[in-house]
Structure formats: structure tokens, C-alpha cells
Image (tube, rainbow, N blue to C red):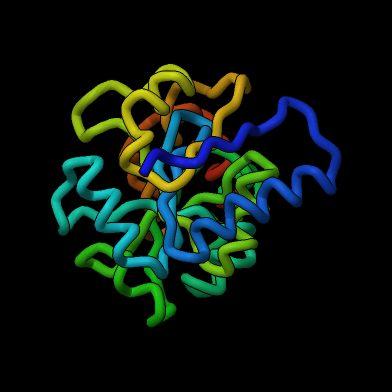
Length: 219
């Protein structure tokens, strides 16, 4: 069965956006898989508590089972609920770059979510910049698994038309939009001992990270 298409308006009032997020989040809460415009690139998403949907993402991506997917959270406070109280550096990065394009690899401490963690018990977490995405995560009532919609090793999709052409039989819902995406993935870091390891430099430059870290160290 072809995916349902739902259009994200360029401009929407608070109620319209909340209703939209309720529809999209409801699909994921019921175990569905969506394709959607992330802040950065076109993505695939589902509830972190929906193992069948996560397996569908692996099949679409062609991704091995031991490779964890990153998660969206609705707020930094939710991340601390999943991962424990943050260090000074982690809190500083969160205050500067969340909501936004920074993914931090952190240890998961909530047993209910252990199934989405890597072998070392960590997972990449981000609070997305888009209001409607944060609302969607809130509707799920759990973190949202997210990853780029392209097959592993292939280019990301450039438009909603490409997403529909390639994924309409693979997902339950496709969110379409004319909104421009950043085109680059998020920056990924792994905080360590008051510093960090840069795993991928994306939309946030290393120089920006260093500036925030230096301020945190001198507080």
C-alpha cells in the first residue's frame, strides 16, 4: 500500500502546527514508519519503542543490526531523563546548540530504551530545531529514531519528489514540504572527560564547539 502524503505548510499558526504534529506523531506512536524533512536532510523516523519499525528502517537503509540509529528528544530536560545529569561541558553544548544541529553521543540510563543503544550503551541524541518535529516527539511519548532516508552509502534525497518516488511503498507516511533543508547533516560529538571527540563535522563547525567549550571550562 502506498504511503499517505501529508503536506507541511510553509506557515502555520500554533493550533495548525499542533494538529499536524498530532497526526504525524500518532502514526509513529502506533508503530508506523515515516519519511520526513529533518532540519538537515530528508529522513526516516519512528518511535524508539517500535522494534518492528526500526527493523523496517534497517531494511530500507541496508544497515547492519549492530549499528544504532540516533534519537530525537523533545527537549534537553528529556535527554537528562534518559541519560542522567549532564556534565558542565554537555550542559553548555546543549544550551548553545539545542534545539539545533548538534548530536551528542551519550550513555542511555533508562532500561526501557536499552534496545536502541549501541554495544557500549550509548546513543546519539539531538533536540531538533524544527518546532513541528519537537511537537511530534512529544506526541510519541518516547524518543524518535531518525536517520537519513537514503540507502547507506548513497547520496541523500534532494526533494520531496525524490522521496515519494523512492519510498512510497516502504513507509506509512511521507511528510512533504517546500521548506529548504540545510543540506548537510548534524555535527556529531562524543563528550569525554570535560572535552569531546569530534565524530562528524556537519552544520556546526569545530571552531564553534571549541568556543563554547572554552567558556564552559572558564566558568
